[in-house]
Length: 442
Image 1: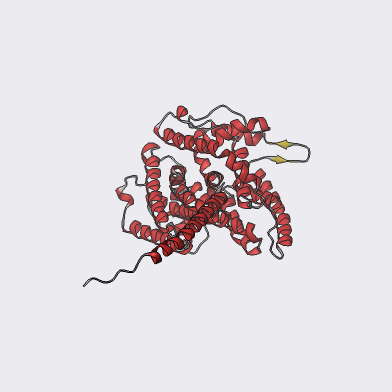
Image 2 (image 1 turned 60 degrees about the horizontal axis):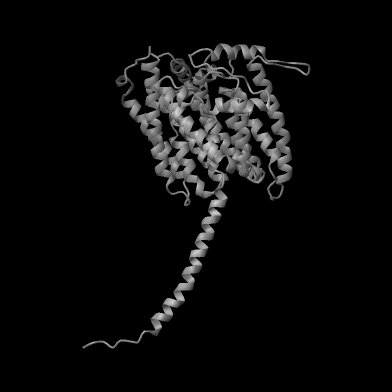
Protein backbone atom coordinates (compact mmCIF):
# COMPACT_ATOMS: atom_id res chain seq x y z
CA UNK A 1 0.00 0.00 0.00
CA UNK A 2 1.44 3.36 -1.09
CA UNK A 3 0.96 6.21 1.40
CA UNK A 4 0.16 9.18 -0.81
CA UNK A 5 0.58 12.00 1.71
CA UNK A 6 3.78 13.97 1.19
CA UNK A 7 4.55 14.17 4.91
CA UNK A 8 4.63 10.40 5.25
CA UNK A 9 7.29 10.29 2.52
CA UNK A 10 9.68 12.41 4.60
CA UNK A 11 11.43 10.60 7.44
CA UNK A 12 14.91 10.34 8.93
CA UNK A 13 15.95 7.76 6.36
CA UNK A 14 14.90 10.09 3.56
CA UNK A 15 17.16 12.86 4.85
CA UNK A 16 20.07 10.43 5.18
CA UNK A 17 19.54 9.29 1.59
CA UNK A 18 19.24 12.91 0.41
CA UNK A 19 22.51 13.83 2.12
CA UNK A 20 24.24 10.82 0.56
CA UNK A 21 22.93 11.70 -2.92
CA UNK A 22 23.97 15.34 -2.49
CA UNK A 23 27.40 14.28 -1.25
CA UNK A 24 27.92 12.00 -4.24
CA UNK A 25 26.90 14.77 -6.65
CA UNK A 26 29.28 17.27 -5.02
CA UNK A 27 32.12 14.73 -5.03
CA UNK A 28 31.55 14.01 -8.72
CA UNK A 29 31.41 17.75 -9.44
CA UNK A 30 34.77 18.32 -7.76
CA UNK A 31 36.20 15.36 -9.66
CA UNK A 32 35.16 16.52 -13.13
CA UNK A 33 35.81 20.27 -12.74
CA UNK A 34 38.93 21.65 -14.45
CA UNK A 35 40.82 24.94 -14.34
CA UNK A 36 39.02 25.93 -17.56
CA UNK A 37 35.51 25.61 -16.08
CA UNK A 38 35.76 26.64 -12.39
CA UNK A 39 32.10 27.71 -12.51
CA UNK A 40 31.01 24.09 -13.06
CA UNK A 41 30.62 23.10 -9.40
CA UNK A 42 28.12 25.89 -8.69
CA UNK A 43 26.14 25.02 -11.83
CA UNK A 44 26.05 21.34 -10.88
CA UNK A 45 24.80 22.12 -7.37
CA UNK A 46 22.17 24.48 -8.78
CA UNK A 47 21.18 21.88 -11.35
CA UNK A 48 20.78 19.23 -8.66
CA UNK A 49 18.52 21.57 -6.68
CA UNK A 50 16.45 21.99 -9.84
CA UNK A 51 16.34 18.19 -10.22
CA UNK A 52 14.91 17.88 -6.69
CA UNK A 53 12.18 20.33 -7.69
CA UNK A 54 11.55 18.22 -10.77
CA UNK A 55 11.30 15.09 -8.61
CA UNK A 56 8.67 16.76 -6.43
CA UNK A 57 6.68 17.91 -9.47
CA UNK A 58 6.78 14.40 -10.93
CA UNK A 59 5.60 12.97 -7.61
CA UNK A 60 2.83 15.58 -7.35
CA UNK A 61 1.59 14.93 -10.89
CA UNK A 62 1.55 11.17 -10.28
CA UNK A 63 -0.25 11.32 -6.92
CA UNK A 64 -2.55 14.33 -7.33
CA UNK A 65 -3.17 14.70 -11.06
CA UNK A 66 -3.11 11.02 -12.07
CA UNK A 67 -4.37 9.76 -8.67
CA UNK A 68 -1.53 7.30 -8.26
CA UNK A 69 -1.97 5.67 -11.65
CA UNK A 70 1.44 5.25 -13.24
CA UNK A 71 4.31 2.86 -13.87
CA UNK A 72 6.32 4.34 -10.99
CA UNK A 73 3.93 2.76 -8.46
CA UNK A 74 4.59 -0.70 -9.87
CA UNK A 75 8.36 -0.20 -10.05
CA UNK A 76 8.41 1.01 -6.45
CA UNK A 77 6.21 -1.75 -5.02
CA UNK A 78 7.95 -4.56 -6.86
CA UNK A 79 11.35 -3.07 -6.07
CA UNK A 80 10.60 -3.24 -2.34
CA UNK A 81 9.66 -6.92 -2.65
CA UNK A 82 12.76 -7.75 -4.66
CA UNK A 83 14.96 -5.86 -2.20
CA UNK A 84 13.68 -8.05 0.65
CA UNK A 85 14.50 -11.18 -1.35
CA UNK A 86 17.99 -9.96 -2.26
CA UNK A 87 18.68 -9.00 1.36
CA UNK A 88 18.01 -12.60 2.34
CA UNK A 89 20.74 -13.65 -0.14
CA UNK A 90 18.28 -15.17 -2.59
CA UNK A 91 17.68 -14.49 -6.28
CA UNK A 92 14.25 -13.03 -7.10
CA UNK A 93 12.07 -15.22 -9.29
CA UNK A 94 11.45 -13.33 -12.52
CA UNK A 95 9.35 -15.12 -15.11
CA UNK A 96 10.16 -14.43 -18.77
CA UNK A 97 12.92 -11.98 -17.87
CA UNK A 98 13.61 -9.48 -20.63
CA UNK A 99 14.11 -5.82 -21.32
CA UNK A 100 11.69 -3.17 -20.19
CA UNK A 101 9.40 -3.35 -17.20
CA UNK A 102 10.81 -6.55 -15.66
CA UNK A 103 14.33 -5.19 -15.91
CA UNK A 104 13.12 -2.06 -14.09
CA UNK A 105 11.66 -4.25 -11.32
CA UNK A 106 15.04 -5.89 -10.77
CA UNK A 107 16.96 -2.61 -11.05
CA UNK A 108 14.73 -0.90 -8.49
CA UNK A 109 15.08 -3.91 -6.19
CA UNK A 110 18.88 -3.76 -6.37
CA UNK A 111 18.78 0.00 -5.75
CA UNK A 112 16.62 -0.56 -2.65
CA UNK A 113 18.93 -3.11 -1.01
CA UNK A 114 20.88 -0.58 1.13
CA UNK A 115 17.73 1.35 2.05
CA UNK A 116 14.08 1.06 1.01
CA UNK A 117 12.96 4.64 0.39
CA UNK A 118 9.47 6.07 0.35
CA UNK A 119 7.85 6.70 -3.02
CA UNK A 120 9.10 10.30 -3.11
CA UNK A 121 12.48 9.07 -1.89
CA UNK A 122 12.63 6.74 -4.89
CA UNK A 123 11.99 9.73 -7.15
CA UNK A 124 14.94 11.55 -5.57
CA UNK A 125 17.15 8.46 -5.85
CA UNK A 126 16.45 7.80 -9.51
CA UNK A 127 16.48 11.52 -10.28
CA UNK A 128 20.01 11.55 -8.86
CA UNK A 129 20.95 8.69 -11.18
CA UNK A 130 19.65 10.73 -14.11
CA UNK A 131 21.55 13.80 -12.96
CA UNK A 132 24.81 11.84 -12.98
CA UNK A 133 24.00 11.11 -16.61
CA UNK A 134 23.53 14.83 -17.25
CA UNK A 135 27.00 15.48 -15.83
CA UNK A 136 28.43 12.84 -18.17
CA UNK A 137 26.70 14.46 -21.14
CA UNK A 138 28.42 17.72 -20.22
CA UNK A 139 31.83 16.04 -19.87
CA UNK A 140 31.35 14.42 -23.30
CA UNK A 141 30.57 17.85 -24.77
CA UNK A 142 33.62 19.35 -23.07
CA UNK A 143 35.81 16.61 -24.54
CA UNK A 144 34.70 17.48 -28.05
CA UNK A 145 33.98 21.18 -28.53
CA UNK A 146 35.36 24.69 -28.05
CA UNK A 147 35.65 26.04 -24.52
CA UNK A 148 33.57 29.10 -25.35
CA UNK A 149 30.50 26.84 -25.68
CA UNK A 150 30.96 24.82 -22.47
CA UNK A 151 29.02 27.08 -20.13
CA UNK A 152 26.07 27.37 -22.51
CA UNK A 153 25.76 23.61 -22.82
CA UNK A 154 26.09 23.16 -19.05
CA UNK A 155 23.26 25.62 -18.44
CA UNK A 156 21.08 23.88 -21.02
CA UNK A 157 21.73 20.29 -19.90
CA UNK A 158 21.20 21.12 -16.22
CA UNK A 159 18.27 23.54 -16.46
CA UNK A 160 16.18 22.76 -19.55
CA UNK A 161 12.65 22.17 -18.13
CA UNK A 162 12.04 18.85 -19.91
CA UNK A 163 15.35 17.48 -18.65
CA UNK A 164 14.57 18.67 -15.13
CA UNK A 165 11.09 17.13 -15.18
CA UNK A 166 10.92 13.88 -17.14
CA UNK A 167 14.01 11.97 -15.93
CA UNK A 168 13.24 12.78 -12.28
CA UNK A 169 11.31 9.76 -11.04
CA UNK A 170 11.64 6.02 -10.62
CA UNK A 171 11.18 5.15 -14.26
CA UNK A 172 12.77 4.33 -17.56
CA UNK A 173 13.65 7.93 -18.48
CA UNK A 174 15.92 8.31 -15.45
CA UNK A 175 17.76 5.07 -16.18
CA UNK A 176 18.07 6.01 -19.84
CA UNK A 177 19.80 9.25 -18.89
CA UNK A 178 22.56 7.63 -16.88
CA UNK A 179 22.96 4.72 -19.32
CA UNK A 180 23.12 6.83 -22.49
CA UNK A 181 25.20 9.39 -20.60
CA UNK A 182 27.80 6.72 -19.79
CA UNK A 183 27.81 5.56 -23.40
CA UNK A 184 28.06 9.15 -24.72
CA UNK A 185 31.06 9.86 -22.48
CA UNK A 186 32.75 6.71 -23.77
CA UNK A 187 31.93 7.64 -27.38
CA UNK A 188 33.42 11.13 -26.98
CA UNK A 189 36.69 9.61 -25.75
CA UNK A 190 36.72 6.76 -28.27
CA UNK A 191 36.37 9.11 -31.24
CA UNK A 192 39.52 10.97 -30.16
CA UNK A 193 42.02 8.10 -30.30
CA UNK A 194 40.11 4.80 -30.80
CA UNK A 195 41.68 3.23 -27.72
CA UNK A 196 40.11 -0.09 -26.79
CA UNK A 197 39.66 0.94 -23.15
CA UNK A 198 36.81 3.28 -24.10
CA UNK A 199 34.78 0.33 -25.32
CA UNK A 200 34.20 -0.59 -21.65
CA UNK A 201 31.96 2.39 -20.70
CA UNK A 202 30.24 2.17 -24.08
CA UNK A 203 29.47 -1.52 -23.57
CA UNK A 204 28.26 -0.91 -20.01
CA UNK A 205 26.04 1.95 -21.15
CA UNK A 206 24.66 -0.15 -24.01
CA UNK A 207 23.93 -3.04 -21.67
CA UNK A 208 22.03 -0.83 -19.25
CA UNK A 209 20.22 0.91 -22.10
CA UNK A 210 19.29 -2.39 -23.69
CA UNK A 211 17.93 -3.67 -20.41
CA UNK A 212 15.42 -0.83 -20.37
CA UNK A 213 14.79 -0.12 -24.08
CA UNK A 214 16.53 -2.42 -26.51
CA UNK A 215 15.65 -0.22 -29.50
CA UNK A 216 17.49 2.72 -27.92
CA UNK A 217 20.58 0.56 -27.46
CA UNK A 218 20.38 -0.26 -31.17
CA UNK A 219 20.17 3.47 -31.94
CA UNK A 220 23.19 4.31 -29.75
CA UNK A 221 25.26 1.51 -31.31
CA UNK A 222 24.09 2.28 -34.84
CA UNK A 223 24.93 5.97 -34.52
CA UNK A 224 28.41 5.05 -33.30
CA UNK A 225 29.00 2.58 -36.15
CA UNK A 226 27.97 5.16 -38.76
CA UNK A 227 30.11 7.85 -37.12
CA UNK A 228 33.21 5.64 -36.97
CA UNK A 229 32.85 4.91 -40.69
CA UNK A 230 32.29 8.60 -41.49
CA UNK A 231 34.96 10.21 -39.33
CA UNK A 232 38.55 10.80 -40.34
CA UNK A 233 41.12 8.62 -38.63
CA UNK A 234 43.13 10.66 -36.09
CA UNK A 235 46.85 10.94 -36.78
CA UNK A 236 47.78 8.63 -33.92
CA UNK A 237 49.87 5.50 -34.24
CA UNK A 238 47.68 2.42 -34.58
CA UNK A 239 44.43 4.42 -34.73
CA UNK A 240 43.64 3.24 -38.27
CA UNK A 241 43.77 -0.48 -37.50
CA UNK A 242 41.85 0.00 -34.24
CA UNK A 243 39.21 2.00 -36.11
CA UNK A 244 38.79 -0.75 -38.71
CA UNK A 245 38.42 -3.39 -36.00
CA UNK A 246 35.81 -1.29 -34.23
CA UNK A 247 33.83 -0.85 -37.45
CA UNK A 248 33.63 -4.63 -37.85
CA UNK A 249 32.73 -5.24 -34.21
CA UNK A 250 30.30 -2.32 -34.19
CA UNK A 251 28.42 -3.55 -37.25
CA UNK A 252 28.19 -7.04 -35.77
CA UNK A 253 26.94 -5.65 -32.48
CA UNK A 254 24.43 -3.41 -34.23
CA UNK A 255 23.14 -6.41 -36.19
CA UNK A 256 22.61 -8.33 -32.96
CA UNK A 257 20.79 -5.39 -31.35
CA UNK A 258 18.59 -4.94 -34.42
CA UNK A 259 17.66 -8.64 -34.27
CA UNK A 260 16.83 -8.37 -30.57
CA UNK A 261 14.82 -5.21 -31.21
CA UNK A 262 12.86 -6.92 -33.97
CA UNK A 263 12.12 -9.87 -31.69
CA UNK A 264 11.06 -7.52 -28.90
CA UNK A 265 8.57 -5.71 -31.16
CA UNK A 266 7.40 -8.79 -33.11
CA UNK A 267 8.94 -7.52 -36.36
CA UNK A 268 9.70 -10.30 -38.84
CA UNK A 269 13.09 -9.81 -40.52
CA UNK A 270 13.41 -11.72 -43.77
CA UNK A 271 15.30 -11.46 -47.04
CA UNK A 272 11.95 -11.76 -48.82
CA UNK A 273 9.75 -9.42 -46.79
CA UNK A 274 9.70 -7.19 -43.76
CA UNK A 275 6.57 -7.75 -41.67
CA UNK A 276 6.00 -4.83 -39.31
CA UNK A 277 2.22 -5.20 -38.97
CA UNK A 278 2.31 -6.53 -35.36
CA UNK A 279 4.54 -3.62 -34.35
CA UNK A 280 2.31 -1.04 -36.04
CA UNK A 281 -0.81 -2.55 -34.46
CA UNK A 282 0.80 -2.28 -31.02
CA UNK A 283 1.78 1.32 -31.70
CA UNK A 284 -1.72 2.18 -32.87
CA UNK A 285 -3.25 0.88 -29.64
CA UNK A 286 -0.59 2.66 -27.56
CA UNK A 287 -0.73 6.05 -29.25
CA UNK A 288 -4.52 6.16 -29.22
CA UNK A 289 -4.56 6.55 -25.42
CA UNK A 290 -4.32 9.72 -23.39
CA UNK A 291 -6.25 12.03 -25.71
CA UNK A 292 -3.13 13.49 -27.36
CA UNK A 293 -3.16 11.52 -30.59
CA UNK A 294 -2.59 13.42 -33.84
CA UNK A 295 -2.73 12.66 -37.51
CA UNK A 296 0.45 11.92 -39.40
CA UNK A 297 2.55 9.31 -41.12
CA UNK A 298 5.86 7.64 -40.23
CA UNK A 299 8.89 8.82 -42.18
CA UNK A 300 9.17 6.57 -45.23
CA UNK A 301 10.64 9.00 -47.78
CA UNK A 302 12.45 12.37 -47.84
CA UNK A 303 9.10 14.08 -48.39
CA UNK A 304 7.98 12.92 -44.93
CA UNK A 305 11.05 14.34 -43.15
CA UNK A 306 9.88 17.95 -42.45
CA UNK A 307 6.53 16.96 -40.96
CA UNK A 308 8.00 14.01 -39.06
CA UNK A 309 10.85 16.11 -37.63
CA UNK A 310 8.45 18.84 -36.53
CA UNK A 311 6.19 16.32 -34.79
CA UNK A 312 8.93 14.34 -33.05
CA UNK A 313 11.18 17.20 -31.90
CA UNK A 314 8.95 20.25 -31.50
CA UNK A 315 5.26 19.49 -31.06
CA UNK A 316 3.04 20.34 -29.31
CA UNK A 317 3.29 24.02 -30.21
CA UNK A 318 1.53 26.68 -28.09
CA UNK A 319 -1.56 26.72 -30.32
CA UNK A 320 -1.99 22.96 -29.70
CA UNK A 321 -1.78 23.04 -25.89
CA UNK A 322 -5.01 22.09 -24.11
CA UNK A 323 -3.79 22.03 -20.48
CA UNK A 324 -1.11 23.58 -18.26
CA UNK A 325 1.36 20.72 -18.67
CA UNK A 326 1.03 20.78 -22.46
CA UNK A 327 1.40 24.58 -22.47
CA UNK A 328 4.68 24.38 -20.53
CA UNK A 329 6.01 21.76 -22.94
CA UNK A 330 4.86 23.76 -25.95
CA UNK A 331 6.64 26.94 -24.84
CA UNK A 332 9.91 25.05 -24.55
CA UNK A 333 9.29 23.43 -27.94
CA UNK A 334 8.64 26.82 -29.54
CA UNK A 335 11.94 28.18 -28.19
CA UNK A 336 13.84 25.12 -29.45
CA UNK A 337 12.18 25.40 -32.86
CA UNK A 338 13.09 29.09 -33.13
CA UNK A 339 16.70 28.36 -32.14
CA UNK A 340 16.85 25.54 -34.68
CA UNK A 341 15.70 27.86 -37.47
CA UNK A 342 18.17 30.57 -36.46
CA UNK A 343 21.07 28.16 -36.04
CA UNK A 344 20.39 26.08 -39.15
CA UNK A 345 23.11 27.74 -41.31
CA UNK A 346 25.71 27.25 -38.56
CA UNK A 347 24.65 23.61 -38.15
CA UNK A 348 25.09 22.99 -41.87
CA UNK A 349 28.57 24.54 -41.82
CA UNK A 350 29.52 22.45 -38.79
CA UNK A 351 28.28 19.26 -40.43
CA UNK A 352 30.40 19.95 -43.52
CA UNK A 353 33.47 19.68 -41.28
CA UNK A 354 32.04 16.91 -39.09
CA UNK A 355 34.52 14.30 -40.34
CA UNK A 356 37.07 16.19 -38.23
CA UNK A 357 34.54 16.74 -35.42
CA UNK A 358 33.11 13.24 -35.10
CA UNK A 359 31.12 13.76 -31.91
CA UNK A 360 29.03 16.37 -33.75
CA UNK A 361 28.46 13.80 -36.50
CA UNK A 362 27.44 11.30 -33.81
CA UNK A 363 24.87 13.78 -32.47
CA UNK A 364 23.51 14.32 -35.99
CA UNK A 365 23.16 10.59 -36.69
CA UNK A 366 21.62 9.87 -33.28
CA UNK A 367 19.10 12.71 -33.65
CA UNK A 368 18.20 11.70 -37.21
CA UNK A 369 17.77 8.07 -36.18
CA UNK A 370 15.60 9.10 -33.24
CA UNK A 371 13.37 11.21 -35.47
CA UNK A 372 12.88 8.36 -37.96
CA UNK A 373 12.24 5.76 -35.26
CA UNK A 374 9.80 7.85 -33.23
CA UNK A 375 7.94 9.27 -36.22
CA UNK A 376 5.78 6.17 -35.81
CA UNK A 377 4.45 7.69 -32.56
CA UNK A 378 1.32 9.73 -33.22
CA UNK A 379 0.69 10.82 -29.63
CA UNK A 380 2.08 14.20 -28.57
CA UNK A 381 1.92 13.34 -24.88
CA UNK A 382 4.09 10.26 -25.33
CA UNK A 383 6.44 12.14 -27.64
CA UNK A 384 6.96 14.94 -25.11
CA UNK A 385 8.23 12.36 -22.61
CA UNK A 386 10.23 10.23 -25.06
CA UNK A 387 11.83 13.37 -26.53
CA UNK A 388 13.88 13.84 -23.38
CA UNK A 389 16.14 11.03 -24.66
CA UNK A 390 17.25 13.09 -27.67
CA UNK A 391 17.49 16.54 -26.08
CA UNK A 392 21.15 16.21 -24.96
CA UNK A 393 22.11 15.61 -28.60
CA UNK A 394 19.76 18.22 -30.04
CA UNK A 395 21.39 20.74 -27.69
CA UNK A 396 24.78 19.81 -29.19
CA UNK A 397 23.47 20.70 -32.65
CA UNK A 398 22.19 24.05 -31.38
CA UNK A 399 25.14 25.10 -29.20
CA UNK A 400 28.34 23.61 -30.61
CA UNK A 401 28.46 25.12 -34.14
CA UNK A 402 30.74 28.11 -34.56
CA UNK A 403 32.61 27.63 -31.31
CA UNK A 404 36.05 27.32 -32.88
CA UNK A 405 35.47 30.38 -35.09
CA UNK A 406 34.27 32.41 -32.10
CA UNK A 407 37.38 31.49 -30.11
CA UNK A 408 39.58 32.41 -33.09
CA UNK A 409 37.91 35.84 -33.33
CA UNK A 410 38.46 36.44 -29.63
CA UNK A 411 42.10 35.37 -29.91
CA UNK A 412 42.76 37.74 -32.81
CA UNK A 413 40.99 40.58 -30.99
CA UNK A 414 43.23 40.06 -27.96
CA UNK A 415 46.32 39.99 -30.17
CA UNK A 416 45.36 43.28 -31.83
CA UNK A 417 44.72 44.86 -28.45
CA UNK A 418 48.09 43.65 -27.17
CA UNK A 419 49.82 45.08 -30.25
CA UNK A 420 48.13 48.44 -29.74
CA UNK A 421 49.19 48.53 -26.09
CA UNK A 422 52.75 47.60 -27.08
CA UNK A 423 52.84 50.56 -29.49
CA UNK A 424 51.50 53.02 -26.92
CA UNK A 425 53.77 52.02 -24.02
CA UNK A 426 57.12 53.21 -25.59
CA UNK A 427 55.53 56.57 -26.40
CA UNK A 428 54.40 56.96 -22.80
CA UNK A 429 57.86 56.14 -21.47
CA UNK A 430 59.53 58.60 -23.89
CA UNK A 431 57.15 61.37 -22.87
CA UNK A 432 57.92 60.71 -19.24
CA UNK A 433 61.68 60.89 -19.88
CA UNK A 434 61.34 64.27 -21.65
CA UNK A 435 59.81 65.95 -18.57
CA UNK A 436 62.35 68.14 -16.66
CA UNK A 437 63.34 66.89 -13.28
CA UNK A 438 61.77 68.83 -10.41
CA UNK A 439 63.86 69.89 -7.45
CA UNK A 440 62.39 69.16 -4.05
CA UNK A 441 60.86 72.17 -2.31
CA UNK A 442 62.15 73.18 1.14
